Image (cartoon, rainbow, N blue to C red):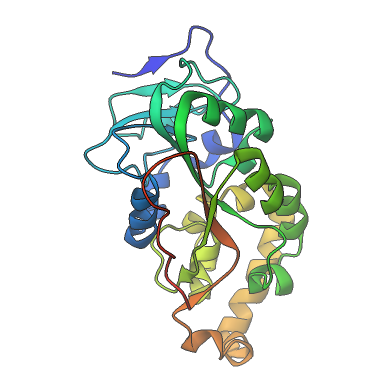
Length: 266
């Protein structure tokens, strides 16, 4: 049964557009799942803010899912589902052992307010995000779609600002494995042919916010360079790598068990 707030907010337009069939492409990666589970520190009750379809929620834990998109919540398998935004969580202070938020803060209208809410309703906070100041960038941005850079830098808080707002005591790098199963944009750094698939692109909020007049010519150039072998010659070094650090970080704040171990390294 799905619960909702008394006055339901409007669903997030981006995820109403891309949310259908989302679970087919965005499959949780077990290596990231293990890191998040460790960081939650044995929490028995967890609120997952920006929960989407429930990726990375630890099994055997009492989880409450919160999301502003009905399309996403309808795909969530849990029983406790709340239609709400991060900025106004309908829970009492300290209601949960831990709060988790995975690749979602950049979608919040007021990230600082949302982070304060996470701290208010939970004793421990675990957040997976991206550092916009990190280099290298994904080749897709540098060579085909520089428009992504402006979009992403406008959406993502600097990592230092997020650490300060959370009061994070632990920052763990998560280099992305070449066979990462969660199909957000960075997942295909060594598998460029996946970007040719419109189903894959539709599951990315970045592609959903760029006009077809920008995306389609870029994808046509990528298709041509894959066919000619130019992409493979230019990125021969990537084809020998198992992981690359593209700036994805796990942040942990609040009391709990020992800090999580380092994630996988390249």
